Image (cartoon, rainbow, N blue to C red):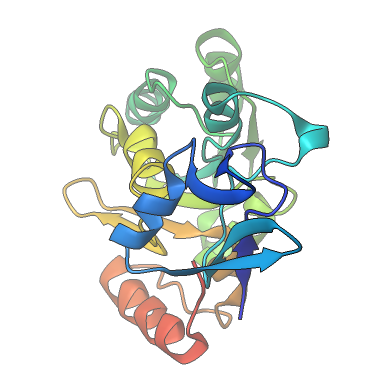
Length: 237
């Protein structure tokens, strides 16, 4: 079973050689989420081990930092793919603008299936401050998951986000998921915003999914498939 050890973490709070707490507050939060932790004592050095959970705030002495800096480093990275299926340019611009105004921006923004990409490229260059790429190919030539595979390949992130052009990502969308994962320590395998038809999945889970599990027409079907995969794989957090 996967586990995190606090043995050499700089945020381990100790008294008389034994760990009594966590400066980052993670021990209490993991306990609230039902995680099991136990204390080990080796030659007067007592520390906790957290079973079945990964703590991304764990820092070794050689990686010294403060809690605020470590929390900033742990901010979730997202890659977003926007599908264009005949929407007009203004609808595509609206979606781009909704991403640009986020407090936490995605690592990569992919705009795919554009028949005339020049104006979109010009708009991104002028109005979008993050990293982006445009994949110009007819929608009919590839099924949706093949497009996703191509657009997400090489994106260094923890979560993939998928939506159609014309949809607007709600303000605070990325930061809300970041808080759920890093502050509340929820196990967020996927998230679905039904009002805007936006699907978010863990990148690890995405690459575990069987091919063609992502429905080109219905995220409801996709979500049911993801739930089955999570149950079968017994995915860790």
